Length: 382
Image (cartoon, rainbow, N blue to C red; front, side, top):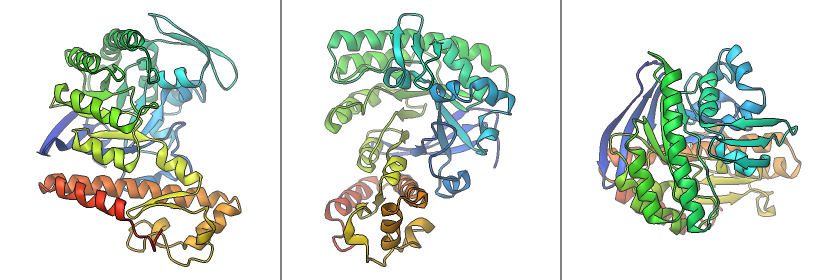
């Protein structure tokens, strides 16, 4: 691994709106567009870190809310930082914890200063402010850090969307001030701002334009994939990405399905994260280039074929569908491990395919072919 102490983004080429780039971080290069496996509690569920790396992942995501509660950011710091703690010497992005506070915590009270809440684990009381969120992420030592924002569910009344968007902008300024105070010379970490505005186009544009005035290392699109239809999400991307800085990475938070990734790259997004491939794997669902395969289905119990014999992933090409079906039916932990491995590998293969296509100026061809394969599928294989 080659380390760098300077955070930066290099836009290598474009094909339409689709972008091929590289993010330089203190723990290596992230090749974009990139899918980041979610390691909420310092682990990508059901996977060894070396297997995650072997799938092609350059970066994983950790969560401020969960890690501040257990084992605590201070303990992780004393133990050498998150990279050492979880045995992942590559790039780590941490989200701010705001989404989990809103969705998991008990007895929340939000005001201008921040949010007070009770832990969903033991009921202990906490106060998360923009400054404290950045402080926690600094203690964890993540390479890419996120501002604290307020993420609301859609649909919501316009006045509520506007209130949350404006609060998030003020919190972005406070997050930046704290980040600059803590970062010090030579650390090379980056802070991303988060565009909010729900499903209201003019609020999305205003949020993106105001955030661009802050000297962030990257900019993300938040508050989507929270219950709205895909067409609403894509409409918001259509109006948001054109006003986001061209020379900084763009991150769509919490997204999504393989089709979401393909559509969003087409609209100029560089980074993604989602629990979907790991969660699906633990529930018996495999993603493949033919489409989704439900290993819970009894039709697989006598099928000796692997999920995809052409895949470079051992979980995909080595184990029979009958065996994977048996493991799931028997409640064996290995079922979730193998299917998660398959799913993360498929997501990384899809991203590599998009990167190659953009570099070779054939993204539209790749887009159309991938859509066609998913639509047609391989009935015999599924």
